[in-house]
Length: 189
Image 1: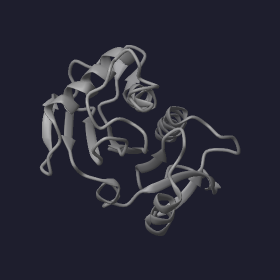
Image 2 (image 1 turned 90 degrees about the horizontal axis):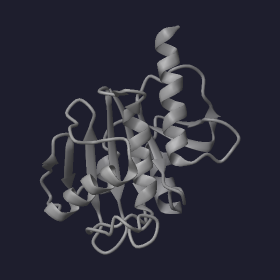
Image 3 (image 1 turned 180 degrees about the vertical axis):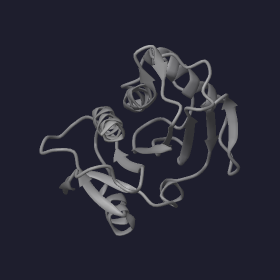
Image 4 (image 1 turned 135 degrees about the horizontal axis):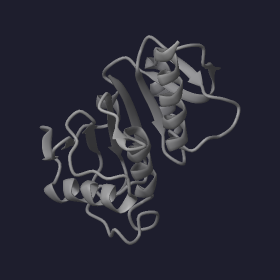
């Protein structure tokens, strides 16, 4: 099972307008693109992937969405559809105990530290170069602004390794795509 933990310090933690994902929804468009990239292939869906989207934006953080590829239904590869499923989960509301919103989508009050309770690889430009498939298949990424200084310090202290996907600053969803590609390629070798 591959797992991606995407931390968004700006994404809304309350229902939002589907007409303004980058604005009033606090760059929810970044989270939506990450889900699209993590799960969708051409005419297929990755069933071996799980995404934790840790939403830390206003008005009431934290909220974590756990999306499980093996259980997903009703998700299509367009931003509006994915955003509406996130919105539906936010409308149901988060509580301490995780609960299902729709098949494959769960919502809870888990926060940043809770999401990092298992071993993970920190994906960061300053990490060591990617050398073959890592032994741990959980990857931590920040949103368009990256992790803040406190989160980065916490992550660096707990990460199994810090790995770089290259010398450029890639979008978060592109990092997911590159990671999936590299892992897929390793299984073919």
